[in-house]
Length: 268
Length: 128
Ligand SMILES: Nc1nc2c(ncn2[C@@H]2O[C@H](COP(=O)(O)OP(=O)(O)OP(=O)(O)O)[C@@H](O)[C@H]2O)c(=O)[nH]1
Ligand SMILES: [Mg+2]
Ligand SMILES: [Zn+2]
Ligand SMILES: [Zn+2]
Ligand SMILES: [Zn+2]
Ligand SMILES: [Zn+2]
Image 1 (cartoon, each protein chain N blue to C red):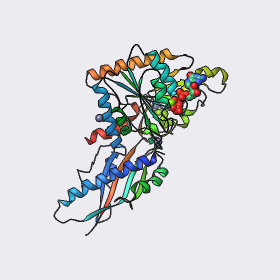
Image 2: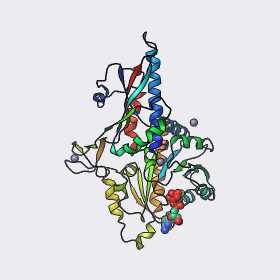
Image 3: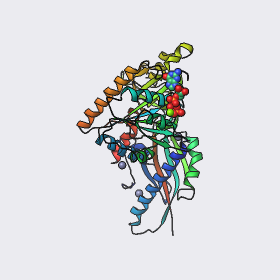
Image 4: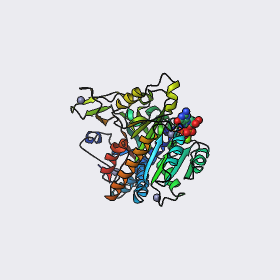
């Protein structure tokens, strides 16, 4: 076996590595995360954040679940407390970044064109167009899509997944990869619950637990300013936790990426 | 879809493996032989968020004109397995019900099924 080819054997995967091959042929065992390059870049982005004590949060949801509306309300609420910055991912337009700038907050728009998700390289490019000095909280609004954004680590510390009450409470069961990745799940637009009779917040939470996800579930309406306090409190706690980690030279990855990281670490 | 991005990452990674392998084996006495990839084996679990069929469709596009262009892409399917933090049992589970098969608790850890790994690359020498 060739030790320069990223061979990465652990007791758990050793049996995969050795298999007979035809004469004149070699099987090079690799056992490396397919998205290793993205993960390396994400790790580098995370260093940018940690060096400055920034907490980076990746917001994911279906199109139109209220990510930008949540940010608008959050940025106004935290205006006198923290310095925030926002990276917006969108297929085509600058609209979301303009909505953020209208609140007096630094925003950089990544127009992804045909790419339906952000990746770590796109985020790194964005970082170099931004002023990170003095920033406490960086929000990354991912492209509205419940499928692929969950597969790409951006260097964020936390994933927040939004589910609006107009979408159906079984979304976590239908998109397990996305909802498994959530460090917090926000049920949004709860002001509409009164006129919807088929969305049961408790069922949405049960579907999340069925994914073995212990993440907190918060119910809120950004437009009608309902339930925002729990969310803001959670953000403050997470920023405090991030500062405590940074002080002792540690970082945090979204819970979901830990498995890939296990292999990744063993490579180094 | 993002399977094209994953296929491009796969092509880059296979290319790097081949480059390293070639460099190492060029030091061996015998060979200035060219290596070509005959098979690429990828391990994808249902929870990886990548659909093998779509990756198989995207691979030829990503590999066009590259030295692994003609390699067969093979998949190792990784069944979903969870370890229960309450009772310790290791059981199989379904994608959207990652509950312990023994006691039914949801406090489990996925120990297999979210893999997205390049497992191996099979290389053949073509004497030059
Ligand atoms: N009733 C109600 N409507 C809301 C709320 N939050 C957002 N909306 C509406 O939902 C629509 C989409 O909101 P956005 O904030 O643009 O959603 P988004 O997730 O950023 O959308 P994309 O970036 O396109 O994926 C808008 O018409 C908002 O006014 C809310 O709390 N209550
Ligand atoms: Mg938006
Ligand atoms: Zn995508
Ligand atoms: Zn950098
Ligand atoms: Zn080798
Ligand atoms: Zn159990």
